[in-house]
Structures are given as C-alpha cells and as structure tokens.
Length: 205
Image (cartoon, rainbow, N blue to C red; front, side):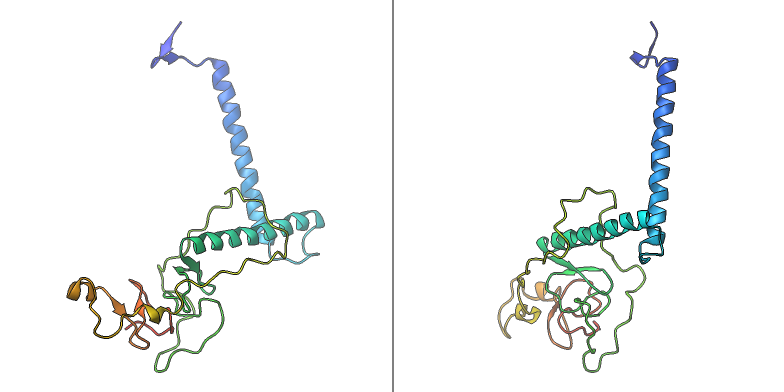
C-alpha cells in the first residue's frame, strides 16, 4: 500500500469523483450567477413586461429584499446607528441630518441653514457606505407584508443637549477640549470626521 504525505494515495475513482463534484459545483454557481443577472435586469419591471412565471418569483424576491433591508436597519438601531435615507451612509442614531451628504437623514427635503451653501446631491467620492450583508445570507422568517414596524424610541433627543453649560469643567481640561468639535451654526457637538452637522445640516468649516 502506498502512502502520500501520511495519507492514502487517492485512487483513480477518487480523482474522478472529485472532478464530478467540482464540475457540479461550478454548474450550480453559474446557474446562480445567471439567475442573479436575470433578477437584476428585471427586478424593476411591471407585470406584463416579464413572463408571469418569472414575475411571480421576482416579486417575491423584491418583497424579501425589503424585509432584509428592514432587518438590517433594525440591526443598526440596536447598535446605536441608522442609515441615511438619501445616500445610505451609516450615521449615529437620531441624527436629523447626515454628516456625510448633509441631507435630511429621514429623506425629506430641507432648506439649508442660513448662510450655508446647499448640500451636494451625492456624497463625495470615497464616502463610507453601509456594508450590507450578501444576498446569500440566511434571512429570518419574514413578517406578513404590511406589518407595521415597531415605533423606535428616540435616543438622547437633541444633539445640542450634549453641550455642557458655559464654564462647566470638562474632564481632561484643554486636552479634551481640543478633541471636541462643535458646529459653528448651532453649537452641536460633531462626530469625528463629519462633513455636515447632524443637528442643523450646516457644512462643517
């Protein structure tokens, strides 16, 4: 009996079975890739634009995708974060404005602060975007369509409330003060690296 690296040398049958398994896995992968391409090309089409047998599956996947996004937003809420409805960036939970694109975080249109140029329509190149789970991630049992999302209680209220009163001693003295950035328009404390104020939407100078 021959041995190879301490194990039994594979027989010709072993090699043939391995080739069969690899080929079958490749076929499954290509079928999945084909299905993904078909779905992406047809997911926004109306009934009648796609054959009924395909439309039914596409419609189901669209509904499941909406549930998946809802679960992902709930995960962010539990982590103290939220997704900007305008650009999709992950920002601190309860923010009125996105600190990446400067738009209203709830997706509504708002006028810019006095003396502040309108915020850009899209985030700058290289801006962080949420790392959404891959399509193949197992999805929990979806609630019936139309089930209302539980009300999310506010966390911390207005950002401006985090500003200590004038004259109050701050731990760390001058060293801590040097790391705190405030909005020049409303005085709210800014997150590190913010491009826009999360309370009033003003561009950070």
